[in-house]
Image (cartoon, rainbow, N blue to C red; front, side, top):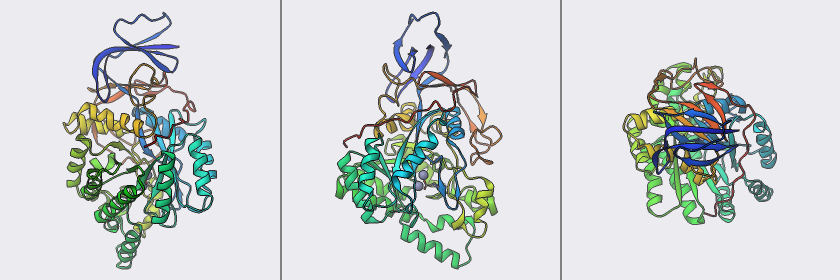
Length: 459
Ligand code: URP
Ligand code: ZN
Ligand code: ZN
């Protein structure tokens, strides 16, 4: 089966031109003008539309046993939501906790995604302890096609690793050519501050941010960078939320430390006053690192526009209102996280490109190309080129809409971006040459998504 997308304006991280794209089976085989194609080809007119490479979300949680409950999406609901919003590949955090066996966890996560995801996917492998089995298990997982690790410097006794375990992970990552992604907060300080606030009777969601202030994130970011500098490993800070942590990361980048920065869409658009609302309304906005004072948002947009922030993900992690209410007596029991997989691209396009905060090429780079390059997927993913997978997003920059829980595909009963206006939207989305979204409807194939094998990058 072949497909011709005609008259669209192709936008990649470094080029912009009008041309037709011809797709055979799963691959882009020709790009040009007046292409002659077989009669059975489906022809789609993209006049007045952009054609972007399929977007990549580098940080999602689909299956996540966490904080006495589970994140709500399945690989079916999460992938359909991703596709509806133009994301054709996601990288899920595979997160067995400290008491679990890492290799068993890896196979479990894989089995849940396989045959269920409608779009392509891969994993960051979380290293949540480093015992005598860890090295051999991680070697096996990398040999199976995983080329990034994840460590948590927070969530002590659950996902968190200590400095010794971080050192061992980075040494192995360096040897294997694997990039290590890190949640950077100082676990000890978080624990002390949580205990102090609760002892003072400060139990509401408003106290989540004061228990993880910007210094706590800046310290974690700086410490991670120091360990990278010492081991020679390459790192990637996930969900950086504020100017203080950005300064710590930038200081390291300026010293030549191979450190990349991800921020996630909530931190560009939502601020800490939302988590200060009473009751469950505030709990809906509890995530870690927390939402910050609003002025940080401009710092993040500027750093993104200039390429200091490399990628924009979501940290998609849906918990419903009932789950959020688990923390009604103590903010420390509120499941951390917020969904965004469906809305990331429309929000980034609208509040970035359309409102003048972000160039069109940087938008594609931050939302697709850079992640493909960092995580061993480029040029198969992350660009529009002959030989690349035909993951394409035909995007109507004139479409208008409003985000609402009523129209979302994410399996959750609220949307943290409820009421946000949107200036553009995907009209057609393809995954390896097959149409998955057409005019706002999912028409794809559940379970067609593939686990992407990645080569170690030899950083
Ligand atoms: O609050 C968050 N971010 N929840 C998901 C787990 C994590 O830290 O990424
Ligand atoms: Zn995290
Ligand atoms: Zn996360």
